[in-house]
Image 1 (tube, rainbow, N blue to C red):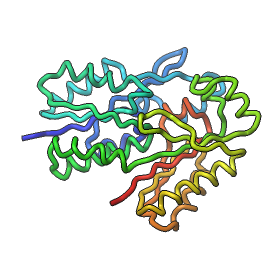
Image 2: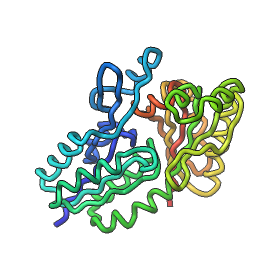
Image 3: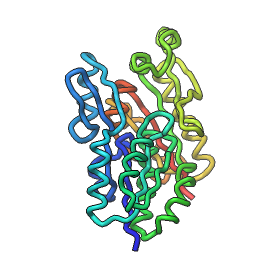
Length: 281
């Protein structure tokens, strides 16, 4: 009889409570400061990252080998026979390979690593879909067959209040970033089919960027029913208002507000507003 464990990393932005409720096993990413190293969601929060940005912008790294090994050892000791690990986009992080190396040390576990080719709560939506299938009694093979469709049904868009942290983190060139800052450009960012960031629009000013994001959501809703999650990075008031403006749109099945994790906080800075969209068949 199969006993299936779902494993993911903290880039999925699911809360610890949600992961516990859905029997999802976490390998947290690392948030690294000059004074020490922390594990996302375990001993550091996004609020703590935001509060420290003026003094130091941390770097981020994949889950430690020690943590991956501990998680898999606990899974094996609990009698699980199969593992499905769902990682943040392989194009953005070495987490996929960290899972692969750790699983090689557990040959008694039948395992697969699924590259979500996405990041943030969109990744979390895929993880939750896999967990629901486990709870519904679906087989390991059935879940693996469904995961590519689950990925096709999810898309995310993000707009930032500042380009400062992308520039400092090396995500965009200093010259391009400086020009963008000078012109008050606010890019609308998504991820392409290969799992890398791409800009689909550049507008001037915060008001226009949120208006463009709202317009993109409405375009998706013309294609059918969707579940929506508004993602806010230290922008609770704006995020709440944005969410309320989505509630009564045609084809909205549900809409929720969620806070981004420490890893996203480190790279986007204060004021990120995003949307995770899941098409519902």
